[in-house]
Image (cartoon, rainbow over all chains, first blue to last red; front, side, top):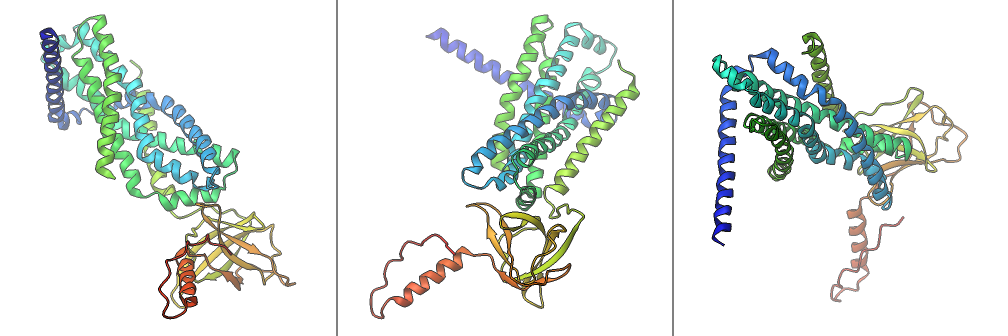
Length: 256
Length: 171
């Protein structure tokens, strides 16, 4: 019994320690951000890594998510004779929830793991230590551009995802089930407001900050072994997914 | 390392695509305009109440879509809503005594305009006005009318009866 309690206390301490370290890490990144933005070339390179390279997976998944929404939504709505409302339902669901959340999960899987394993490998092969010896701050030179690249890329990826998904919904609803095209779009336009789009983009940005932060933090603090790098990658995906969903609840409650 | 020009180009492409998507969402999903096809002519109709009719809603005859609602404005002189319809050129022989009514598709569906042909020899041309119209049905008005008619039937002095269950709106 005593052993169990001691273990619990140790686990809690470890958790708190990690949260504290993460907060400190985040503060340091924010402090460096104004100067980091001046390193345009490094940031652009990371926007390419996090954004442009994720584009294909985002677009493919977006299309299929949209097409599934078209199928399911049509099946549900035609029972009450309201298949015209499919456009509204799909657009609001995508803008407010599905778009940012699915994009963030895909982003954590595609870009987050890449960041974490890259930084973890740099740690394991002592590249970060070598930079410190050369009086180059690895936080500023390596970590910060990767973080900023992810933060810039996420809202844009979210917008691309939502747009492609809507195309997918339209493809199924209008092209194959014959929902009236004018009703589909005009009802959507009547019900969607700019605040819905703002909500989606704000969520995209917030998830971008969270997922990028977790990825660079886990990678930077990875144990310098092959196993450590693997663990950092796994943890990045798991923690990113959990944090995204919790954050989503908080943001939704705030913005409704 | 890839050559940096290729990175610049694909990053640029990604950023442009992202902003294009945002622009699409902001303008196309929220704006009120609907693409109109080329071969069509316009008709006008004046309604006391258009209910939930929106631009882009279909105009049908016997259930077949023959056109779209182009725009809806409120005329300050007539104190009526003026609805402009765009009808496909194929359907160019609609009698000029046809009537237009605002109907609802399904239980929760959107509203649309139904045209029923009249018996006149003359047909509606571009810019003509449809004389005979029927407004959108406002459920509240229907209910209050029903309640008032019930109240009038009650003999004076009798206790006010409990409101009877409201029947479904029927034409």
